[in-house]
Image 1: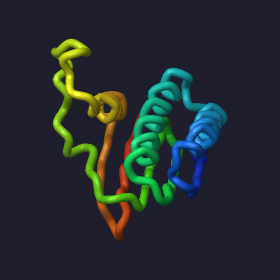
Image 2: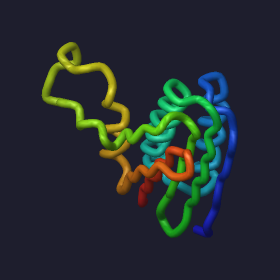
Image 3: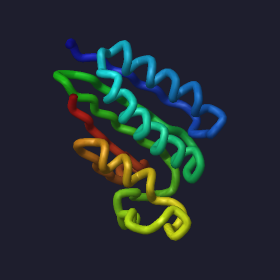
Image 4: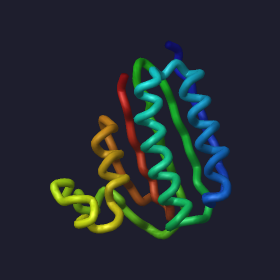
Amino acid sequence: MTAASFTRRQRATEADLPALIGAIEDWLEHAGVPPADVARLMIAFDEVLSNIAHHGGGTVDLAITSDAGAVTAVIADDGPPFDPLALPAPDTSLGIDERAVGGLGIHLVREMMDEVRYAYDHGRNMLTFRKTF
């Protein structure tokens, strides 16, 4: 598989998300990412982008590369500084009604991706994740 890339800059609003999510999924499929890995990646993209749209707003920049059996995504936004990786892992031993609301999505991202990093740089939140296949 040859290297491929996808970039997008747009408003980080809930109304703009469906088209972006659809474009990412189409690109991953055309880039030759196996279907099971597309599904895992889409959960991560949906979670991260939904959180940005819901809590941050502003502008989101997305850069995805697929090369040598791996997908790397960098998602940057100009919302308030927020490190989702600093959140404690949810207690998954509790029943659904006993758990605190929130935190499960980023937990899934951490579990399904091979690498997840956060940085705050030049007034932008930057979340990077990588999945090998």
